[in-house]
Image (cartoon, rainbow, N blue to C red):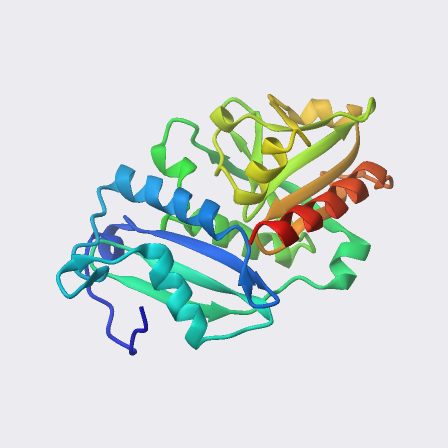
Length: 258
């Protein structure tokens, strides 16, 4: 629903990070994979016990979240962009944000390197897109100071998990596409879900020493879609044949499922 600017209501989301957010890409005025984003958000709300008693009520009845988002979008039209949806017990915030990825990045590919911070695969917060996002932001800032586009986290067992704002995929020498298992400790990204549902990749445990077997690498998130990796931890990836096919397939899937 349309909302006037209002003050943040302090609650456990404000004080302790017990809140969630989704960043949704908009192309030609359509939110991409909104259903999948809201499904993930709803699961997270249940896990955190967020009932949204007040912000999602209209005339005493629970408002439909998808209806709320689409009504907001009707008042904030955008051809190509994105919006952020933040939910805590007492707050629902919708804000437009810039789409930050451009042609040069896809052409060049991103540079990644391993972070010294470890993902905790035993924490339920690892698997939620929650307001406990400090590790990602701090490591992202630190990486940029060293000319790195995306820091990559390992878990407490030394297994590869994910990037600060992305999921990670590799192409093996035989052409198979693999991505770290969810249980390694990572956010189940929406684009990751789409690729797995279409059989474009499979999950497995991947360690840093396995990188020598990989001939391509790419990252995914809701704004970048599928982004080539040119280098990870000093290993240069020059091939993009499989990555290019997946990029094209993803654009087709995104065009048909907004």
